[in-house]
Length: 120
Image 1: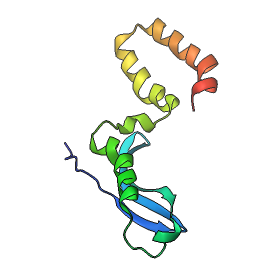
Image 2 (image 1 turned 120 degrees about the vertical axis):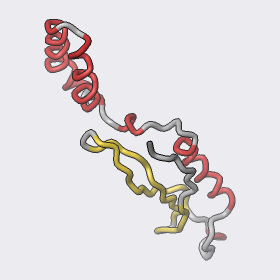
Image 3 (image 1 turned 120 degrees about the horizontal axis):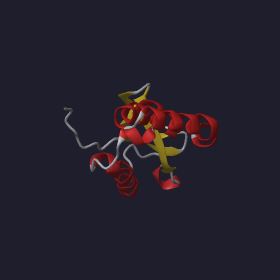
């Protein structure tokens, strides 16, 4: 089991914006991988253009953005689409719990009506 650490991120200026760089777990090809992401927080005001360190209000906004990751309320499985969930999680588990005819009906309904409307 992986140890969960508190992230503070790295705040810097880029193209007139304060940017927060942090790491996040994402589901890719059915595997959970860790990716480094950057998110714009707020435009740099004229009084802070020459500052190396971000002002206190920017640090507080960055803490709010990282709060779901640090409180462990964020789940990487929430980043997958409904189509990925149904194909990789629901149908394999339903095969063990449902009768073959019921599962066949569920698959037919999913393929004919639901996948095109809400898969992505």
